Length: 311
Figure 1 (cartoon, helix red, strand yellow):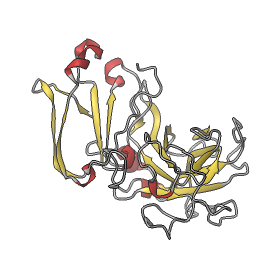
Figure 2 (cartoon, helix red, strand yellow; figure 1 turned 30 degrees about the vertical axis):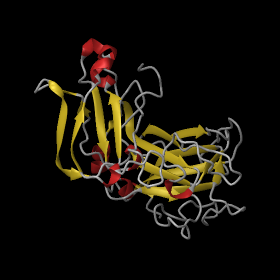
Figure 3 (tube, helix red, strand yellow; figure 1 turned 180 degrees about the horizontal axis):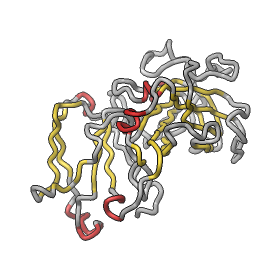
Figure 4 (cartoon, helix red, strand yellow; figure 1 turned 90 degrees about the vertical axis):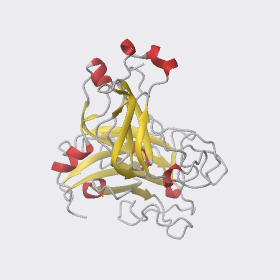
């Protein structure tokens, strides 16, 4: 159903990369040089005119479908030239971290991509993208033994930041502790995917990175503690913590923009995510007064910030 807003945003993480991750398969360690992709024969009745070519997949080299794909274009479930399901071979072997199947509504029905560049955020309740890595497993992961599942959000944002400080996405909490959200680590990335009925934003990651002023343009993110359904009145409302990421980093194929909300430099898994990059309004690194890993918030604003050569 293309009108269902949760369609088109599936990202398969291949079971995670820690041996103790739920559904761990070891796939992250494998080197892959091709993909076979097809629609199951029992599902052909769901397709428009029985044509599988608009069912596609993107093969990601980054966590949760952020960052670089093997190819910018989606790989089709039907190889028109050879009249068979899709067998696609890569130029070189790669280690795949994520797979995103989707229906290309733009090709199937002429839906227009949303304007902007795709930006994705994944929030984990613990540091280092952990406990659990996936978004489906119920694991006690808060200090009181309760549960908060990881969550992702994605948007098509104006890549120039022309509307700053009034642009971007302004939203509230989710999940088991709504309206509060406990965040231990947050992943940010440029994302070639969108929300149904469109697939993707109209500016791809590779195109965006080819023209944006990478050293002078940032992704800005502020967290607020405002209560249920109370959206900040402005970017400069009292906030809990903020962080800024250079587009230089988000355009770097080898960089993972994962940030711990509190200092995890003494943890066993230290180094997986960056520490001390979330700062309070006075510029000092955020810390939880109770010594816990979580930063709790009810609202956020994320937007592209121009002229950010001040850090």
